[in-house]
Image (cartoon, rainbow, N blue to C red; front, side, top):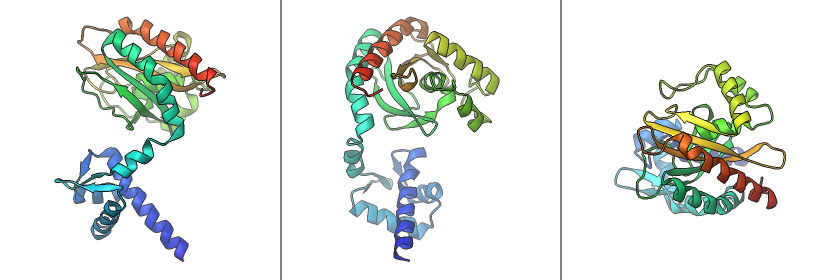
Length: 253
């Protein structure tokens, strides 16, 4: 009974923290209740306990994630080592393009952003460090799906119907499968305002010893900006190949 009770408390705490995935940086009690599915009294009591533990902080609006979570997140070895190695290559790519540079992995079928460099002229994007996006509507996601063992076929089968985010999102499984084959052949993936209207992207996979993608690198830019995806593509392709070699040498790929 004690273990069952402990498991229930842990489950509620995880549901409370997961509420911040789809919400903003700060949530009210009503938002916590809606996103976690917990009773109002339970959510309020649990939020207070998480504040005591440093996992949440009180804010003027309600609650936000605490510094204890940030400290723990910085210690995740797999993503931290990838970020440490990739950062110099990302900075070179930023200097070459002056656009937003993103590094991501595929986690549980979604794009998980490990690092983002945006400089002073930040372009509004739906992505954030530690955030997630559907794989089929991002250049990063398509690059990693294309360089998976079955070229994304099992992912597509598991995620039909494909949800649209804009009018340009590929929702036809057959069309997406054909595009992944083209990406596999060319080594580059494009987001043509498929995740966010007004934002385009070119991405390339970071491949390991087997040739499968362990991560991906991208440049995002406004669709009406001075730099186009085709202009940035050579730099992205070259940077991803050089970073892939480095990751393989360090046995991180």
